[in-house]
Length: 497
Image: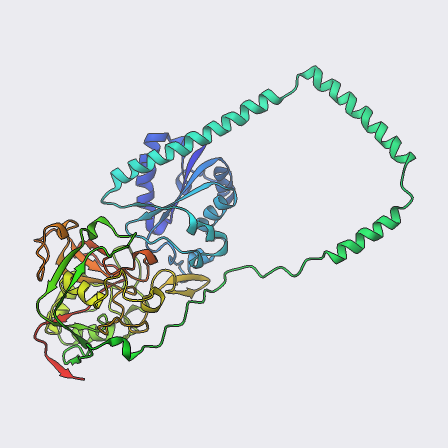
């Protein structure tokens, strides 16, 4: 009987795996659900048990949390880089044996890219994934069960057909005996014939075969193993791309540079021809920004945030681990990196200290487009860090990373990293249907909804998501290791630059 094999990390997704196993066991039966550590008998060889169970599995469910790629052992080594890592063994074995592998992306976890994975796991990146969250667990697992029923039924039917075919193909006992007699007789006749007609040119033919084998000797096999990707080098910044809006100032509070954004109007929401546009980005509408404003040329940096912390005795740097237990990059040691892992309130408080506020969602998209009505303000590889070009290598595994600001081309307003790199909090509450009823002049966002808007996509996002209209909402108290922000000023305390 075919079964469901659940692969998970004990350190990070054990609770989620147990919850999922309970639901699947209730529906399909405990004998058809395998949760490695819980269903291996004491004294059994772990590797052999996995191999045996996977041989009977119809489906392998791989629970991928936000730190699935980066989880480390007690020595600080990335677990997935170890060929003996149990999760790696489970997934690699399933892929090798042709078991259907379904990645389950837990709570906003990104799907790993092939170049981030060890060679034996690279095919995982091509498997269609399913998202499951704590908030939507009940309905999402119900949907998963419907999918699994189809595969388990198909697998059971195939196994039953093989069994029936084997029985029907088995010859009767007396017929088998007769066949054995004929086989022996045929063998004796063949041996006698071979002795009589043994070719005299055996040596000549052997020499010819040896010569042909030498001529057909293949070239050296290419070396196997992880090949480090070669992302295109960041294009040199060209001052001409800043267009006519080249007024910049330095803020005397945080030390960052701000760009003047003139008043104007634009089409907000889904860009024309954007096939990846989500329903919360519709309907597109013409929006006017009646007053110009100053906006940070880059995201707020770690260095600027440290200055903010030092300005008061009751402020501290945020924790270095986020809601999903994912560690921030270079924890507050590289002051040039974007400041991340802040709550919405912490981002807002920083902007107030520096003399400003978070931009409204309309101001953010207007500034990001820079007068461009397309889904992006330039060629993707030239303007943004995303899942296909942001990876750095750590102990044999590629990790998607954020980068110091302004290594990519700015838009026509002179703003850098409005797309990709770090996600950005903005000031508005989030309502997926707001575009259908909000005002079209200086829209302030909806009334309180419990979620705050974030924009811009990030280095974890796949290229299709890196678009100026991309928008979602999140609990404002949630810390995400790759969420940053930039500030806006209406009447700033700025000095000329």
